[in-house]
Image (tube, rainbow, N blue to C red; front, side, top):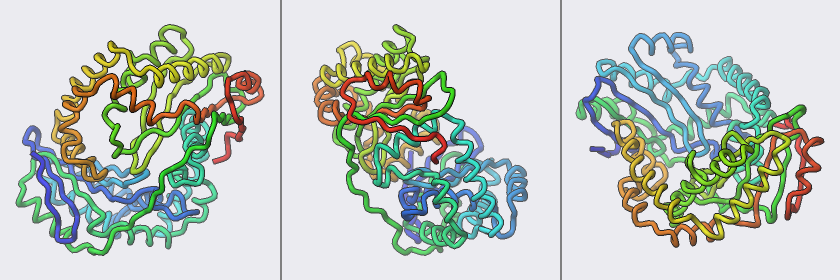
Length: 434
């Protein structure tokens, strides 16, 4: 059973006990992510998190890794649009020294000038290598073109221009803003003793500043009208990456469950309609899928395929036809039944370990969902009707305002793209513009 309490610094602690194996998972989620980067400083949160990982004031990077290895621990740090996460797992008897190191790392990081410069060089190198990954390149430009100047459209990892402006002073200021008591959520799972854990967390983190956590004001994103195409022009592409999408839903959307059910039936499974029509019946792409991105505000619904350049137009036309039919007619009764069974049965695999159960509670805490968001999901799916799915799709997903983004060789594919129906605009962007 998950327990929840707060430290004297105002941090939330969620715990899920299990004695199945003598291991403890310990994580710290920071309610600040790329959305909190100041304008023109895109990539700052990611730079801060990576610079923190470079070591404490006592331990340099290599020494830190050796210390963690010696205590049988693993540690990872990730930076997303809305949150940062620091944490890992350790054998039970080394929980206290692991937490001690993690506390030193996040509360008193070295942030040495040389380390910050190294992270800056690594992030710029990451951008240079990004252009070799067509799928990631396509996704980056899709978000940028979909959201424009809205914070959701800003690159989470920064751009060459923004990263080049970041300084150690920026990193220090971001750290000071982010690591305050009310901005942290601790998640602990596994084989621990509750009283000892409580005392350990209070000892190491209870004295943090209790000042107000940073916030960001998000307006509802808008989507440019009409069907737009953006070609990321890359030489000698025999295969394309294609993303087609529109505005989807937010994490708090009242149509959340019927929309998840509807998408599962359309493109959320290998056996769903989109993959069956595109891959199995016509062989236009080795795979075809659709998905929602969940954020603090209304985010995207997207289809993904990767057809051969010669098949790209046919594949896109088919996807648009399938999409229109789906929005107009919803799911077939057989599709609804199949995807509801899948969602109901697969839910068991979301709670079969203490770590997974804790992850669900962290979602509830970080997204501000109702307490029964996950526990009531199966019943909500069971009650979802075909009419509810159909109404939700028509209410939320546009058949007119769409963005199509491709990584392809523009000179070869432009004549074909110009044959697509109802296209308002086609833009071409150099592949190395990151």
